[in-house]
Amino acid sequence: MTKKQKKTLKRITISAVLYLAIILASKLVAIPWYLELVLFLVPYFIIGHDVLRKAVLGIVHGEVFDENFLMAVATIGAFFIGEYPEAVLVMVFYQVGEWFQGYAV
Image (cartoon, rainbow, N blue to C red; front, side):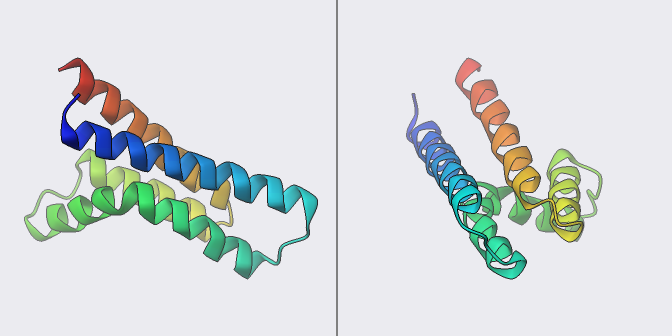
């Protein structure tokens, strides 16, 4: 496993653990929507900052409809409609798929 793959696996693990902790906390205690948004943004940016960066760079370079842009639109859209857990999980699963693809290559 390369250094980059280890780093990505670490980010996936951290994001998944944070996601589960937030879900558990929200089941035990009533969390206001704005605090829930902030809490879910933490694992989202941990796991998805590179995808968001590549999406912005793709737009700047004229490659609008690549997979990074579509993932960014899907997850940001989920945040806008209030589906914070789904936004984080979509990004986690996307990164898991990318990690398996890189590992297989």
